[in-house]
Image (cartoon, rainbow over all chains, first blue to last red; front, side, top):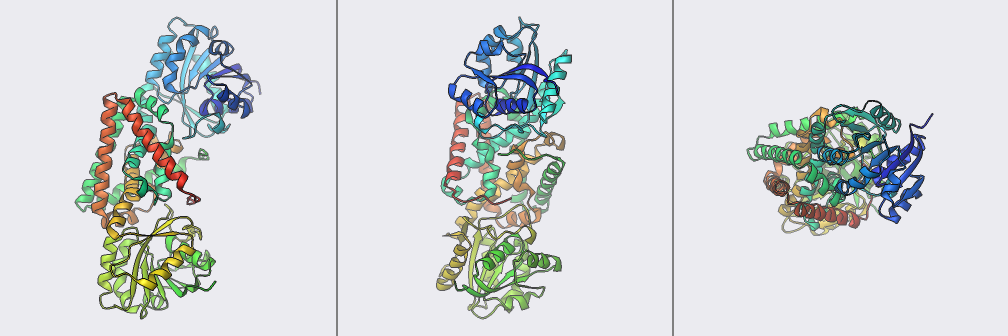
Length: 293
Length: 293
């Protein structure tokens, strides 16, 4: 098959960026993949795992080489790079990002691109990841069977959106369009709340108590081994939705506790039964391999 | 090596009971293992996986064959069986249970054994399990590297406790002695609270939202696929400790939410960092394979 893009520049080839690079190269979706980073060692890792064809520490130079530019740095780093990117990105290039929160990031990117009406920006969020970070943990099949949510700007991006969609579908993702606010509400519930709840569960356990734990506690809290700085950024850029989800979770726990305290075990069992059914149904409909984490 | 027990009768050879039977047989720790159940089909499963040498639907007859009798039924079933067991158990037999909560079960068993001062009762709780149930999911290595908590009665059991300890150690567990109240407080935090929190997280997600979930949500809520009736029994017999753990978790979540609402992200990140460190440390000290679930 023909490549979809002549060149793809990945800014920040960490776990997600490098996995995308590996998948693009495996499926021949770009003429070349350029990795742009801030540390020689990370770039070497991206080269070593075959995520990129070439690397550079020069942000402007690297970005200028991309027909498609993928912002894959931690969310908190994005604003510090945008002025240079807006200045260096090619005429009529396609810019995308893979950030886990969309409204705040979209605001930052569109502000930075004010003077670059030629650049097409399509925000996306591939629903895949790992608590492990860096190109060393990247895998070409990270996106297989996963959803990739597009939150296009009003006015749309027409042909460029179609090309980006084709790229994500060729690396195995199913693309869904959603408005940014709905996206942020969604991920607050399916990803951000579980992360904070996992941290809260660990706060309720001493190290001594934890030494008796079986697989249950470790699985329930796996996500809490994720990088705190990344999660700080996520919290900062989706605070409102996360706060609402946490408040609901506290309320649900309080309700379950009240049932327990009152000895209303039939109703408590119903809650457990509903939760089991929901999870089992979701799992059954997930016709894809689990992320290898 | 010599068997430790001439015969072991396992009442309720489900996931835990059948796994113990398999492990006992693999390591040659008993002359024979008798499986006692209420359904032909479950007993056939136990035979098929090699968990037992023989099976019976006759509770009294089966229990009478055991030098060691292991109560491995769901917690809620135990009281319904105790009168028959107390009548049928051999003179000077050793009785044990593997229930996940101890204070309530110990109360029931000791009351039933009032007229049987000859019987030695040692309550235990192997810290291993799965959200899958039944002998079909049993594995001989379920207890390898796991803790098995003994909560012996005051007065102790001396030689019999030593024999039971030897059995658990030979199937790979490390035995820890604890008083029943400490045990119940411990498991409320490392097992029961995570279970109820997983259910609460699923209550906060619609089926539609859940269809976008990646591995994070599935791992965080894995335990919620466990059998609701079993968990109802656990909640019923450890309500006080579970309620206290839930209240603390709600408080911790509320504190984290207040930090988020106030934009105190440094402090929120510290919480995430502490949780990550605790989990990573626990995982590093766990020198054993994870339960295969």
